[in-house]
Amino acid sequence: MTFKYNNVYINDTGTVTGPNEAKGPLSKYFDKSYQDFYFELPTWEQAESKMIQDCVDIVLNKVDRTKFDIDLFISGDLLNQISASNFAASSLNISYLGIYNACATSVEGLILASNMIEAKQIKNCITCASSHTNAAEKQFRYPVEYGGPKPKTTTFTTTGAASAYLSYNKKGIKVESATLGSVVDAEVKDAFHMGAVMAPAAAQTIYKHLLETKREADYYDLILTGDLGRYGKNILRECIQTEYGITLKNYDDTACMIFDLEKQPVYAGASGPACAPLVTYGYIFDLMKKKDLKRVLLVATGALHSQTTVNQKLTIPSIAHAISLEAIE
Image (cartoon, rainbow, N blue to C red):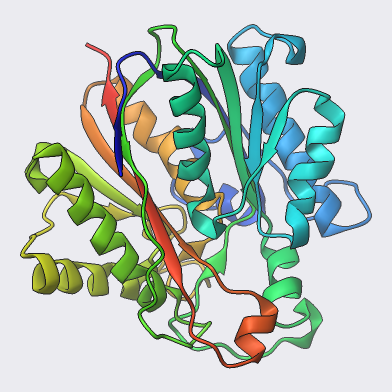
């Protein structure tokens, strides 16, 4: 299902990261970075909620608005019951939608906001997605202190939060269209190989988007997935060529961009709901505003498993949503 928008814009963004991202190659594109994982709070979960509050404050300041001017807040994260977003929303006291699509959450939020703005149901919206490497490790893998070895296909969860302010004011980046993905089960059970889990969903959504918009892949200056990692990136190239006859030339993956894969101990690259929007709102939007990129298709991918389903040895379903972004002429 593809939506076309005539009057929706991402006016500005707010980005906050942890210490690992601050040491990566894109550090200068983030608004704020912390030097530890607690941010002077007692738990990692509270620290993640603080990042959400911070990036919302940053974007509000950029667009010269207060929380009382905002019609809707949409946010999601990886914690049980999206608790980081829920606690952050409690401090805003505005209409709120809490969402979950794992690492596809950021684009899911952008699509929901864009649909409501296009339909004139709301005038503006702030969307947010966050993750915290230690909180995610504790919840989905092993206690951080356990120090268990991991295979090279493992991805390293991003610590950060990214927010976007959307409205019908013609400023910033235009939201041109979007394609909702379907849940795909590639029958992969390995929770340490998220790239293999999510690549088929990314391939299907890119194919659907190009088919429904009657476009070729080279219509876009960049097709950007987030976050398949070093190995998933190659799996996508092969999968989309084999299954749909599409050759990806103008392609990259945010998991391979936010960290230095050769110098930082991040295995196959980054992951987490914050990864795709941090790279996009910082580095990619900077290129778009300078007109180095004019058309970008952002495809956020999510693995829809839980601790319970992994322990039950079930396969891991996945989803990918795509959003077409354009520089304003």
